Length: 368
Ligand code: TTP
Ligand code: MG
Image 1 (tube, rainbow, N blue to C red):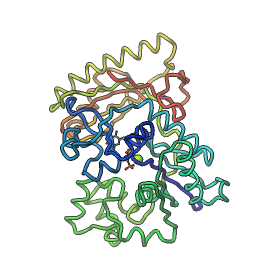
Image 2 (spheres, rainbow, N blue to C red):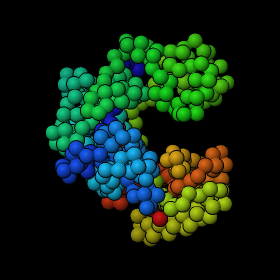
Image 3 (cartoon, protein in one colour):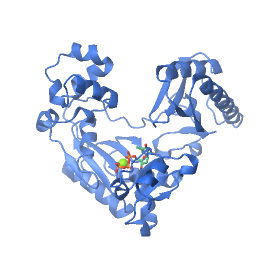
Image 4 (cartoon, protein in one colour):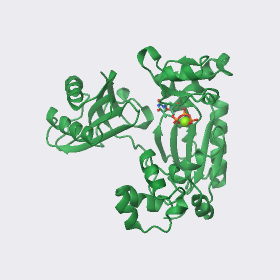
């Protein structure tokens, strides 16, 4: 593979910036988006003024209001953010078709083949950010590099409203002093373990043989071996989001044991069957044959999510329950959301108008 040109774009304080643009009197105030303390809500995000008070995503709204009593707390308006996200994607599409959305506000662009800006990726990133600003009055940050991991790390470098380029020959100099915390896959637990072994920066791992890393960190070990050297060969995958039918439910009170989770999952499964039959009756569900790819999703009160999928010969409740039991048992932490669903094979001709994400593939997802 020749040298690639990858751009990672990440909108600044996305939900908050959209709301503030629409209500300019909020401009110089601390603003957060999330549900209210009465609903034991958490912040989805907040603007940079609120961050100066220590507020951040996933913090409880009550704590945020304690840290910053004058905080303006607005409810989440997903349809609005989805609409803005589609407009941003249309700007990306002026430069490349190889777009991999990671969320509403984040995407990888492979501009290796783009002839815009004489093929200069930094200039392309600059122009995209300018167009987003001119047309949508929102700011974005960008990272430019020869692979996805470096581009993503770089987009954080001059955030907000900035960009950063890592030229390929500078990769090792850049990685040498980069905190291992910045590596995807290295969470709090892995980072503490690395620190306990005396490793803080990526360069600290360069002399460690692969098998030692694997011994200590399993699968993450082999990823670390490549990533600490700035290597990442994963391609930009358009339409990463697979077609699926799913139902999920968020709970007012966290679920704290497996039995509670199984009980709630039983309700979600009933709703799933209802949706499935309704779609089939309307001719909006494709004819599919086993094996079926079933999945479950767990969101913990810490706001981290996990999903698990497996092929099964039928869509019985028992199959979902076994996935849930296995994943929950691996990490029995307080649960705030559960979901289940089925992935549909690629050629599934589902009715577009039911798509949740428009440009990004079809997803039928329901909240209970
Ligand atoms: P982020 O890109 O992580 O955050 P951000 O865009 O608000 O701020 P910045 O990139 O400048 O640091 O997430 C994008 C959106 O996703 C965010 O606006 C709200 C939503 N979100 C949640 O709902 N919950 C979360 O825990 C996080 C991290 C984000
Ligand atoms: Mg963002």
